[in-house]
Length: 538
Ligand SMILES: *Cc1c(COP(=O)(O)O)cnc(C)c1O
Image (cartoon, rainbow, N blue to C red; front, side, top):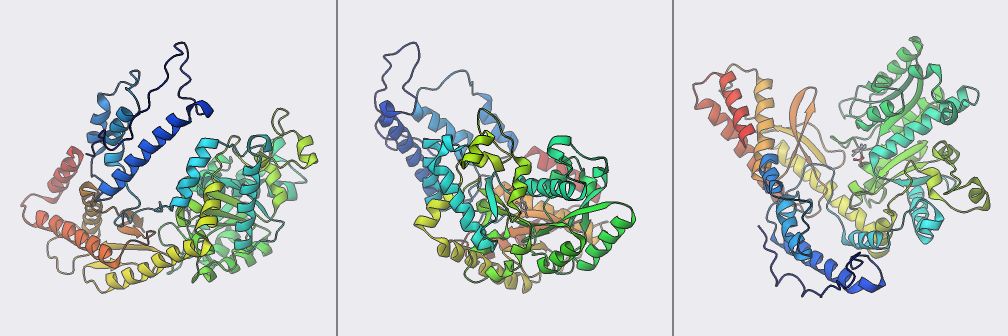
């Protein structure tokens, strides 16, 4: 555990306690700038010491072990100052957090981040702009709009397109399907306004098409929009994990034959597991023919917008009616930082509400830019500043070069896995993920289990065992019901030798698992139960 010593922290400034009734010394204002600085400096030192100190991405503590740390904390008893609170923070948080900057964190789409964006966070919080109305943000609104316009140009949309920053891909996808649903009703149902009238009777027949590999937020959005999970038709993918066009066409035809109503297709530009990019040109052709809304979910693939080598992979994205971008995935920005774009900007009005106290219609007519008019949120963080400072300090080229590095690393990693007799890797990475599993070349003992059950158990065990040790964090997923392991490479500091060492850990844990099965005379079911019990104990 990291000790927060007197040395580490800056000398404390005496706090003025002269007002007993209400203590204003904590308010951020002109009077307390030295306390502000002192507190931020102490935080900075602790963060530096923490990052300096971390040898692995995770401590391996279980939820139960960590919960014990909380048991002795009485939240109604305030601690004696910042130093004590930071000391406590190390034990409740920093000692056991997951560290995404670590080269052996290769699990999910949470990226290491660039410091110009962290610098922006300090301004975002200190100034505390809310980008809902001009009278709460002023220049902030223009900075956000500039970032929207910049991204629109990268996407290849016309200048008339518009967008808004969101909390991430989930909210962006919800907006996309909301716009698609309301647009359909307005155009096809004689100006039916869901905003005013609620869902029309036929809404239970609305259908949204997407690939089986698209993000679950598509289903979640359909549920939130009153259409239900069942409104989402999940279409098969081909051997490259891209949406299969024949299946899509069949699904749309079957839908129409059944009397259901296709309203939208969601194409994924970088699936979460495979990075695969759906064939947007063909999907667009179909959308035109069937008069459907085309949404492109580029939550992961958006990094290609700044890539210096692979931007062509997103060719055709501008054909979509709307696009999801997650800067907090492949633009190396801190959570949260996402956005939603549409080339039908008039459709953003489906989410506007004119409140007299906040954003009256008159303000819009006067030309006051109130971003709340196009957002699901009201009070909203000024996340756009992170991208702004990143572009101004570092530049898009440098961002793209980092993403290009991990794309290249993924190709090397694939070669490595291909040549390893004990690893089955499913496919060449489309961006920077690898889906694979440990599959021992010479294993005779798989007692009373089919190959697949054995391999499923073994690979699930490997992921948990690695997480428990904390030296590397990898992900797991299922493909056609079978358990696989997954690397999501986003850190350009991850080297091929880091990858080699993680693969060694995987094989080590896999072989241990086999040895345990071999060395016991217990029946498989007993063994499995004991393993599960042992894992619960941890
Ligand atoms: C991560 C992801 C999302 C969800 O984005 P959040 O920022 O986590 O809300 C949506 N779509 C895809 C393809 C994703 O990978």
